[in-house]
Structure formats: structure tokens, C-alpha cells
Image (cartoon, rainbow, N blue to C red; front, side, top):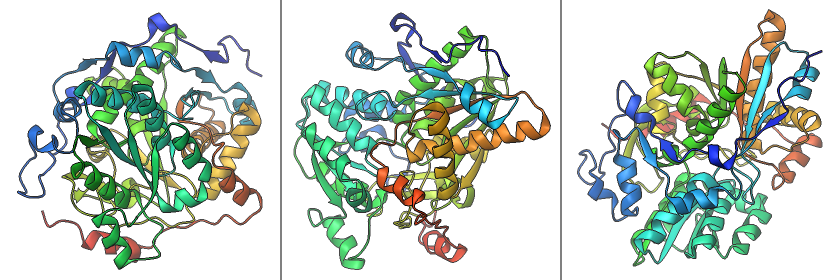
Length: 456
């Protein structure tokens, strides 16, 4: 039985919090391929993004050279409401698994939004306020991003319209309620409020929607409404920049404890949590300082990394956004409606896609019944009900710890606990009563999306 020399929960002080974000691109040996302007097919310039994004965020999206970016004081002050977040040693889970491995997790759910998404939402709302915008639009899948941005926009007094994937809108009504508590307007997507939504419904009137659909509607609403801009909660370079605070806090805390991870594990949908958690550890890997194993865990129902194509694709179903080189299932891909969590975007962050393509990280896909099995085990021993998204990382960490049990290796495992699952009780109930099933797309299903990829 292990002795508890390291505290169960370890917090940095406010004075020890990072005051700069880390830009992973500055240390990449090769840069991701540039976004392409869909009208010209040529690399997008920062000015091309101004009609969609506020200027400061467009500049951050294109900046591949600034290693560190100062966090504005106003953003730091709001961060201090819920940050620094705890680094937790999972002693009870280790004991239950009878593993020689040490398991740590960075818990990002200790805020009203219930997830890590608030880290970028605050920054994006701040820059919108600084620019004097009249309002923002966005999309949300499972609801964490919409909730976080609603909270941030309320703080900075900015009107917000959220297009929520229809399947999640129907499965998670309380997410809608909490967004409306923060005065956001929430619309199930696809909807009849935009031309993109009307076109999608005309083709498939019974669709449950996708993030690609919701992005198309949110972008259209932004560019056709004076003084509005669009913001996104994952995938983009700028989002990974903001989320680097997760990894920066984690690395500093582990250093103070005399620890360093052998394995870093994160759930992967669009890449915001994963990119934020791994950022400083990937930096060590890129500059040759250390060589941690980095693993992305994605749902088998939306397997962008493990079964996708590394190709240019549109970031939305309506094909109005710039094209990005990424691992993608095709912008028309719509995950099965029985997929209970988020992580349902058709593509993956261009930064993470490039790192994965170049062999700096691994990826695995897991079925959702195994994910919820891991979630239940974690909840019993660590007393936190995890979000389904987070539970993918938990599944990966448990599997790694069990391998250590077989081999006798005393690895140090770190994973990201992105948030809580208290708005996901319908999915938990489905797992508990045995009605949850696994949905894995066939090769033929995926081929339909691949055939529609841009011919570049």
C-alpha cells in the first residue's frame, strides 16, 4: 500500500499562476500547412479573417513566432475566480486498480461552466469587448463551450447567440437553461433562421445536426449582422494558445512536487483540452528536453485521428469557412445520434494533426460503453462525476495503469479531467439501465465523407 507523501490535491498560489500563454507553434520543427481562402484557394491572410473574427484573435490565429503571449490583466482577474485549478493524485483509483503506476489528473471542472472551456471563452469575450463589438455568435456541441461563453459574455456584457447541435439540445435541456441564465439566446441547429440551416434541413429534414452544421449557421449569423463576430471553442490555433494555461499550471505544480509524467493523456474532439494540457510537455519533446508519451483518446463513433484522412477540408458543413489541413472525416460527416458526449467534430486541430502526422503523439479510439464503465469506476473512487468527454481520458489512463500492473512498470500517468458530468445524467442513466449501445461508422460510412473532400 502506497504512503501518501504527496498531497491528494495540490494548488499553486495566485502569485504562481502563469501570466503568459504558450504558443506551441513557436517550437514546432515544421509548421502546419496554412489555412486556405475558399474563394481563391490561396493561403489565407490575417485580413481575410477580419470579417469573421475580431482583429486581435485573428492575429493570434496567424501568429506562429511569438513563443509567449501576455495574458491581459482583466483576463487574469477573471481567471482568479476559479484558477489555479487543482492537480490531483488519484490515490484511491490507484489502489482500486492495484497498479504500481502513479496517476495524476488536472481538474478543470471547478467553475460554473463545469469545464476547461472557460479558459478561452474569457479571453475571446475580453478581446471582443476591447474591440467594441455589438455581439458574438458561436456553436456548441454537448454544451460546455456554449455555457462557458455565455458566462464570459455576461461578465463582459456582450450579447451572445448560440447554435446548439440539435441532438444535444434535445438530450441536455438544462444546458440550454444555464446558457439562458447568462442571457444567451440558444437555437437548435440546424435551424430555419439561416440560409445554411435551411439548406441542410432541405437535404436532410430529420438530421440531429453536427458541429459543422452549427458552425455554418453561427458564421452566417455573424457576417450578416452589423457589429457581430464569430468565436469558436476548439480546433483553432488561438484556442490552443489560451488553453495552454492548463498545461503550464500542471507542469509547474508537478515540478514543485518533484514529478514529471511518463505518459500524458487527453480526450480529443477538436483539440482544445488536449492541446492545452500537453503544450509544455510537447515543448520538452520538441526541443529534446524530455520524451513523454502523449496519447489522444477519441470516440470510436467520431474517429478523426485514427480513421480520418490528413487532408484539406472545410471547417463547417456549409463550406463557408477557410479550409484547414487536418485529420478529418469530411465536413459532411454527422456522428450517430446515440453518441452521448461531445467530441463530435469532424476534424482535429491543425496543430495537433501536424504533430500526430509527424509522429510526436499517438491516438486511440474507444467505444462509449467502455468510456462510461471507466467514468463509473472513477466516480466511485475519486468522488467526482466526470463529463463523458473527460471519461475518454479516464479510460485511457485506466488502460495504461492496468498495463503497468501487468508489466510492473512504475510509470507516472497524467490525464486531463476536463469537466463534470452533472448535465449528462440521461447518458449515465442509459448506461446504467443497459440501453446504451456503441455506434462505430463502417468504412463505407466514412468513404462518403472522404469522397467529398476538396480536390487539393
